[in-house]
Length: 337
Image 1: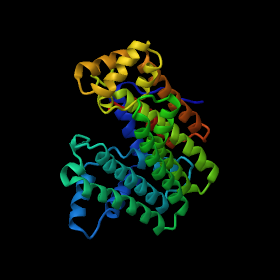
Image 2: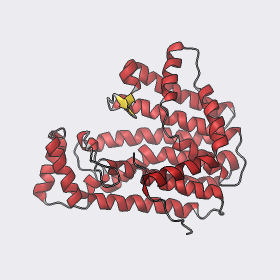
Image 3: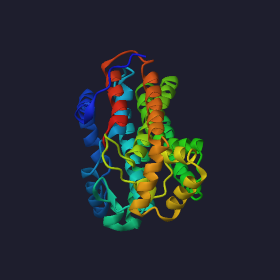
Image 4: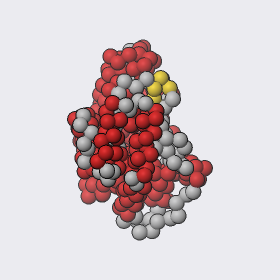
């Protein structure tokens, strides 16, 4: 596998992200226009909410993967790819709006969430509207295969959330079940984005499946990186313990619970169930997870998924787009937030 030397440090990581964006800057600029047009409605309230959403969009990683996976094949990006990218972003935004309602979260990326400003009923309806707009985009161009690909993500994301809720009750989550949860909750959308981008430009089912697997591995690595943010280290700063406070069983905790002695395990589970809001108790769990090797293990698994994604990527012919995709993959595991 022909891997280039990974970038070092936060500045280098951001720099490579900008280099990757330059490879598709024309597509992203046109995408912005098309996306903004796609969410317009005839309801003033809905338009106000949409303007708020658009101003606070994230890094748009998923549309970037759509365009890069389309272009890495050597194919020309057409209207179908723009529709796929918009659908992916609509689906991602809808999932965040609905997640904030489910989690009763009042903040999103440092700003008030939709449900905090407009209450739950409107937030749920806005999420539904975004999903409907996405499906409308796909059917308007008769892109039924792209619709199929992304519909799988909608189904799996819901299944992942419900599986997590079911298993979190007894705090006895097995590692294989954890992987199934994050494959559905997080990796499914990224894998569908890569597959939709590839298919929109090539209509090649074999290549589409290859890039779907590529995206799935990136998505798995992405979620484990999020798990690691809860503990902090020299890269991401002080630990937050937010997942512990929300009783989420992430990979570092699962690994530690299966390796500590019975008394420590019992105490950790008690804290997770009953004292997960007490700062000193959360700090105890973080210390025990670290001592048991949970952080190192999770980092190793993250790197394994990243490297498998890169192995798949480098079965394709070399090109600047391929290098841009590698940089984007590395960004997902080297990012600072």
